[in-house]
Amino acid sequence: MSSARTSLMLDDATRRAARQLARHYDCGVSEAIRRAVQSHRDAVVGVNAEERKRRRQVLERLFVLFDGTDPEAEVRRLKTEDAGS
Image (cartoon, rainbow, N blue to C red; front, side, top):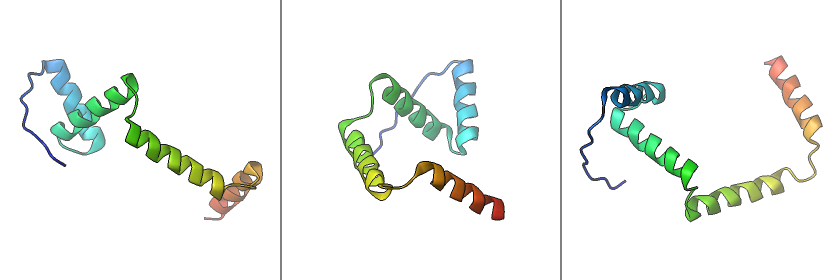
């Protein structure tokens, strides 16, 4: 990852929010801010074309893997397995 140092002026509420996110994600404040900015960008603008392509490929692979699978039977099987653990 390439990075550049940037200084931000945060008010008290924003600084507390950044620290709270850092604790939640178990990371540093800078990383929490990066995640928050990227998440907000994805929510407002949408994910970039490369990520959209990757997600589409994963979804298409799942369709192939689960072709012919009865979803209700699969859920029952998984619940039975979990109950036996």
